[in-house]
Length: 86
Image 1 (cartoon, one colour):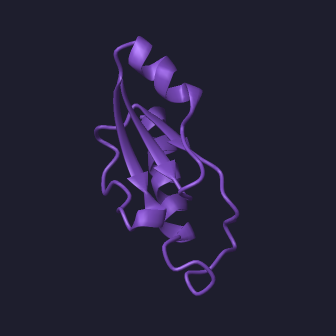
Image 2 (cartoon, helix red, strand yellow):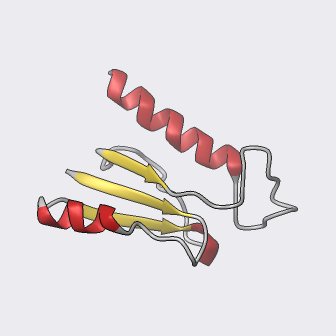
């Protein structure tokens, strides 16, 4: 299984999720959006998407938080949900 983490802030991390994934032999990737890393453009290689918390909300604009694109993140989440339905 391939797990992708979306991490919003430098002070948050996947914590125990990493141990869980490694102990089961899953592959792991990250999008550290606070560091300017892009979200995946496709869900083809994502079996499990884990979106970490942070002070942002779906209403947060890029003017308020330049590295957080709520629309792009919601689209990724929708794409992952829709991929499961297929």
